[in-house]
View 1 (cartoon, rainbow, N blue to C red):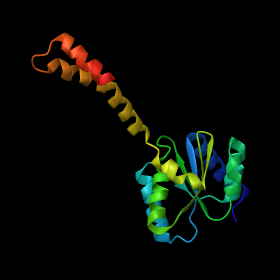
View 2 (view 1 turned 45 degrees about the vertical axis):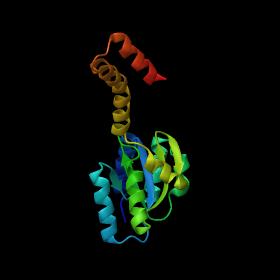
View 3 (view 1 turned 90 degrees about the horizontal axis):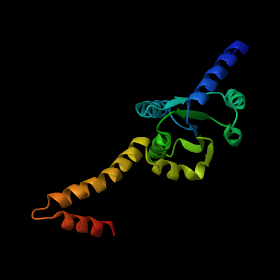
View 4 (view 1 turned 120 degrees about the horizontal axis):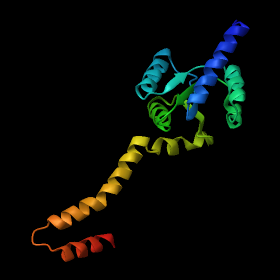
Amino acid sequence: MATLAEKKAVVDEITENLNEAGALYIANYSGMSVQEVNDMRGKFYEDDIKYKVYKNTLMKRAMEEVGGYDDLYPHLAEQNGFAFVEEELAAPAKVIKKLFEETERPKFKAALIDGDYYGEEELDTLAAMKSKSEVIGDIVGLLLAPVSNVVSALEAPGRTIAGAVETIAEEGE
């Protein structure tokens, strides 16, 4: 049995994790072997996701201290693991989905991402979200596309500026 001081230290740790995280995922790991849980931890670690198992009562106490986690309270039952992530907010969903497809475990229960609640039926949506670096890449690609169109139009042999402008205008339509 943990002492009151030990419980307080765990609640403080959870509170710190909640304050640092942009997203919190809850997954039920019931029925998973020790090896499967260790493999899952490794996959989370590879993606810079902090994965912890806490007692539900201590988790709820920390959530109440931080505030804003009311939607997750009903999910604090059974054997839960908690994934905390700061940057790539969809990364835990991708890991959970892949593992579930392979072994039907862990079971995604819910997530709170930037204050928005996502239920178990939304795992596919979360897993399909692009990462921050993918979104930045898309934006850079969109910003560079018009420049490359201008450059290719100007580099075309025998082209005049008027012809290049006409080509660019046609591509824009």
